[in-house]
Image (cartoon, rainbow over all chains, first blue to last red; front, side, top):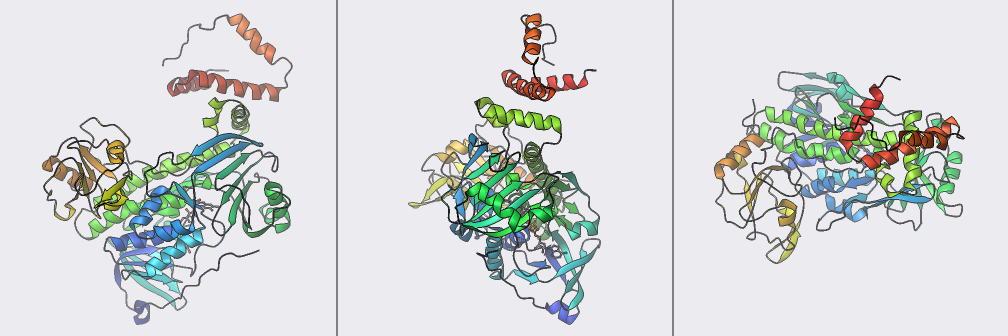
Length: 537
Length: 64
Ligand SMILES: Cc1cc2nc3c(=O)[nH]c(=O)nc-3n(C[C@H](O)[C@H](O)[C@H](O)COP(=O)(O)OP(=O)(O)OC[C@H]3O[C@@H](n4cnc5c(N)ncnc54)[C@H](O)[C@@H]3O)c2cc1C
């Protein structure tokens, strides 16, 4: 097999606390330096928290894993200052095509409107993503990244966690006020606290092959049902950087993973797909089985769960890492507010409320796609095949074709932190929704709305000058459209229905908390208290 | 429930005959596949999720 990527080896360093044999209490410890743990480290540090990250390994993600990153996580990484290398190296795309046999039956455009800084999707191998974040973590004085540190047991105290950590120098203990478990789908921490992780396993296997080739397939997601080159099953083709392509072949439940993994069996499958005379080399191949599962509660005492440790989905909607990053976006400002004594601990419980709601939405979407691709029984196979047969001729059946509904943020419409609308509004920006981007101009310079939202709360107002609204540490930054920035293309007015005198209150994670047709400081203060757990029990 | 449960098919005998005629020479597998396509075509005609939900529930709850 060929390698386009050289895996870095990060140095193990013995920590001073292990050398000294002293038990040190840390405000936040993150377990796992995968995409979610690394994002957590960067976001916690961005909010002023000191964070220790423990990882049992000393390199980045190995093998065929995440490829597609969606707009919202990229916006979060942009807020954290790490999106640029990802966007530079990644491959931008937004079109997906679905084929039945050799006929196209369905096409989707993931970002049909313009006026957003971040593209709908990029494709990038997971190891690059992690490498860029490790680099950013290493430069950040608030982040202490420790390789070859494996959490082997833990005990919950009244308001802290005691951890036993194994390194090449043996086992030592450390304590954490808060522990964030980002240790992946097989989370050790989850087992250690006795959390349930239940859901559905799919009775199917998929061969995932990453190959290197120079080919002029377009940069689109191509998905086939029952293609001539792989009859009776599905297949997927998608471009990554460095001329690496992700190929995915459904194999069926009866297939033998050991046999399928052999290059002499993979190569004919690949040739059948891309053509006999296209030159390629295998970079990596594995056989996967998928599941959709969620942890019972995202909080167990002082232990919190995020990413695959909290929820696992089948990859057909590219929802795994994408949604995990949004867990962190949701958690970090809340955790900082609680640790700094600005908000009651109950605010942390809303992390479960909002992100379990999102996880359930992701699991619902991933399960629907997987059930379509891998029908549960004879009857669902009949309907699936009927949809595909009809879709070749008739438009009406095409929206039923489901090869994966790609990751998009789940609005927290039922969140206890929202202040319900009292006025009538047009558009999608209901409380709980993540703020839509829009082009703006500041002092003649073009920029983007999301770049102008504050670290804390923001009041987005239009067509009026307002006095600051005093709310202690949560005092919002005021962004006056028409004064601070110009809504040059009218997209803010359009997307937010933000017209004369209207006010939006936006949370530190860029989600709408409340909105009013007129400016009322008392209502704004009440909504901030509400959004920060100030009036929770 | 807004489903029509009183007779509404224009010519019941003609409809029934045409449905069974269409499947007279089919194997069970072919007829089942055709029925699945028929359900989808009719579902699109109905459109309303509420009505479709009621119909699914009713079909499932009816004793065979
Ligand atoms: C084939 C495939 C395709 C996918 N495609 C996509 C996609 O296109 N888009 C997408 O968003 N997602 C995709 N995913 C999902 C994505 O890979 C995961 O969601 C993502 O890696 C989860 O990140 P994480 O940080 O939660 O966990 P992981 O990446 O699993 O990281 C966990 C880390 O914790 C460490 N660790 C484990 N136990 C311990 C311990 N006891 N002590 C210390 N450290 C520990 C591990 O070494 C590891 O570094 C795909 C997955 C697969 C398998």
